[in-house]
Image (cartoon, rainbow, N blue to C red; front, side):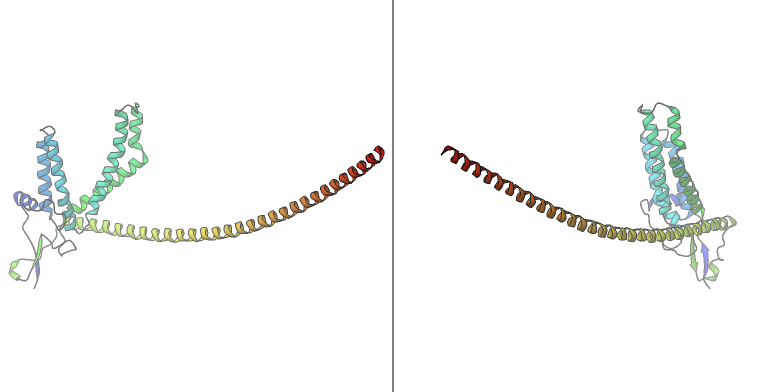
Length: 281
């Protein structure tokens, strides 16, 4: 009969050795003992390196960056995506930029009021980003504290539990009360995240339908406007043609009258010429 047994917990040196072989590896899984022993080593290392100006800070930053792949593998081990860590990093960068902008303005003299600088911390956007970052940080901590999943998941096989067929190999591994509690909290977070995702998909679908309706209405309005514009153009064309015809008729009338007047003047001039000729004779 197959049974699940638990591998012994890694020691401090074993954890460092295990992590050293996968410094830049984001795929796969890492158990709790590997992650937390390495985290302790980074904390101790940073404490010592802070005593060394500049160079120590740079080395400490490198150590912190090297914890990112290990953190992702630890999230994988508890059955969660590394995008949780990416979301936390992005929010932290946004928060730092928002606060940094206010501090930079104060440092460069663009804002000389301390109250203006402090108001940046109470900015609604800053508070929302901080709150989201804090909540995601708590969620990630819960995931990091969760025990390894017994069965293989999409990220690989469990680095802690193995399945054996030998009855004498050991009893089935049982989770502690702490692990069970973390498992329940993690499941609750997963359920909430799935419900939020479903809700977001529903809202996105409704927004898409609403947008389609608005587009259809806009098209109908455009067609009506086009028809109205066409009617207006036709009426304007007819009016213009009527005005042209009337102007043409008026011009012809004026021309006829001018011709008649001219003919009268010419006739009168001829008569006067004849009379003048007779008078001379």
